[in-house]
Length: 105
Image (cartoon, rainbow, N blue to C red; front, side, top):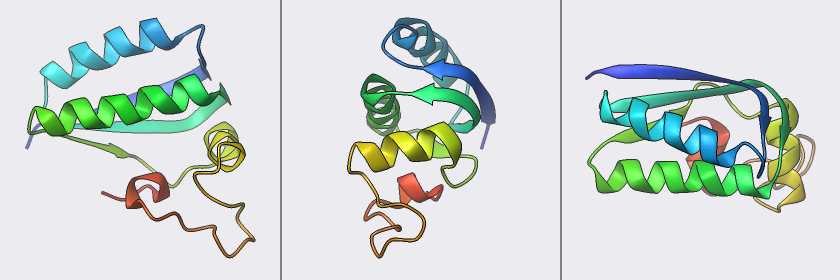
């Protein structure tokens, strides 16, 4: 299986969404699995979360996979908690229903 890892750094927000989307579409065309490393992101908003969801759905429709390189931390974890996708690390709802947001699958 061909795999490409994309390192995200800086911001994954509405202002950068178009550029990230174009890069991800190009990278996804080159592989069967795209691994997204979000550990160096400084800021993520709901548009960034939507972009990750859309990327994953597009990949699935093309018979490909997208996964996170590691469990969410930093800016991505903060955005997921604020958006209600998962609780904070200490809460009972820390582990989300969807294993994608836990850095699995």
